[in-house]
Amino acid sequence: MHRPLSDTEQVSMLEAMQLIRRHEERLAELQAAGRAAGTCTAVGQEAAAVGVVHALGADDLILTNHRSAGHLLARGADPGRLIAEILGRSTGYCKGKSGSLHVSARELGIVLTSTIVGGELSLAPGVALAQRMQGRPGVVACFFGDGAACEGIFHEALNLAVVWKLPVLFVCENNQWQAYVHRKETMPQDHVRPWAAAHGLPAVVVDGNDVEAVHAAARHAVDTIRVQGGPCFIEAVTYRLRGHFEPDDQGYVDADELTAWKSRDPIQLLARRLIDRGVLSEGEWAHVRQRVEATLDAAFAFAEASPFPSADELITDVYA
Ligand SMILES: Cc1ncc(C[n+]2csc(CCOP(=O)(O)OP(=O)(O)O)c2C)c(N)n1
Image 1 (cartoon, helix red, strand yellow):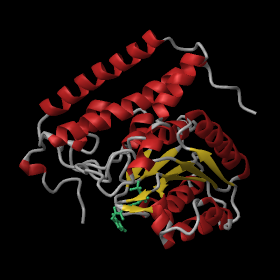
Image 2 (spheres, rainbow, N blue to C red; image 1 turned 90 degrees about the vertical axis):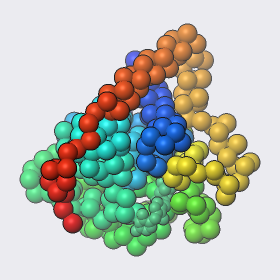
Image 3 (spheres, protein in one colour; image 1 turned 30 degrees about the horizontal axis):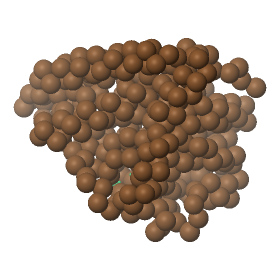
Image 4 (cartoon, rainbow, N blue to C red; image 1 turned 90 degrees about the horizontal axis):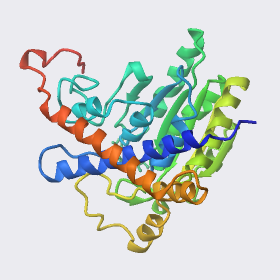
């Protein structure tokens, strides 16, 4: 049994979620102004990222997909370096060569961001096997969507992880969308969990908009992996509040469904809960939001003032 989260930890998780939200909204604004390339945001999914990543230890590793900013920032990525990377600047995590879709950051344990849907699933068992063969204790958290779960590689990855008892935490962010296709068009059931459970690993569904619930499930799963050695699966049920790829008018989205999910905004849910519990005052919450804006002002300014890589670096650090 874990000790409950302290007030300070909960406020810091709220701030992390707000930082992720505003990072993505401001990036979308920059894109709309023609100063950034299009990106995939994960607005609305912040609780899944923060809840899981805050349950990981320093030795643990992360593999993620095309909606990776939440995982990176929750892990402590420097917003300036992350934005610089996305804007193609040489001060970014991969010297501006990855864009938003392929960021890795060894110092943070972010092994890779895959834009090949399911690519992260194909690599996670191998990374976990390497951890074990090299005697390293880290758990490998692998984030993917419900669309990736509809691919065959999902079953291969889970099967291998179970048979070889690999330390993988599979985290399916079921955000209801698979690019421009609703998951109801591709999945016979509402949840991915039964497919995971059929492989014989502990598998749970959580309210992916409730950061406390996600965090509790993730702590339990990480402990189980450390003690028992095999994988676990968490399905965080959430919703992608913005489009698939900026810019996106969401013309294909059911307006009532979107409105219903907006009323369960994960940041508003936590802020309201902390205010109702007396952990945070309205004024302190406003102060948190101001601090986030100031952090992002500095981060965007740093990134936009940073140079692009020079031409002689064109074929360094890349392979094909
Ligand atoms: C192998 C592969 N097939 C198709 C695509 C095009 N594509 C990009 S994102 C996406 C949807 C993925 O859905 P999901 O895994 O649920 O993630 P989400 O976008 O909802 O976060 C698709 C089909 C791709 N990048 N890679």
